[in-house]
Length: 78
Image 1 (spheres, rainbow, N blue to C red):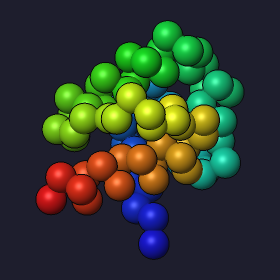
Image 2: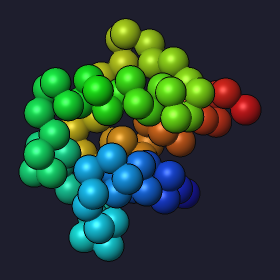
Image 3: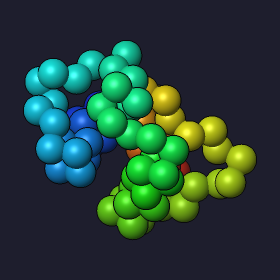
């Protein structure tokens, strides 16, 4: 089962959006995340969760993909 909590908390902290309004299908673009802020978001994820993204990794488009990415990377780190 996908644990969305870390990614959703991150979105809440980073973007100031109430996580109760988010679900896996919420598009990051609808939250005001453009290509530049997505890049910044990825760098922050790497720093906050102590992981490194492979350059071939597709950037997340929605909150569900973001949660899956964070979960996969933190599991690989452990």
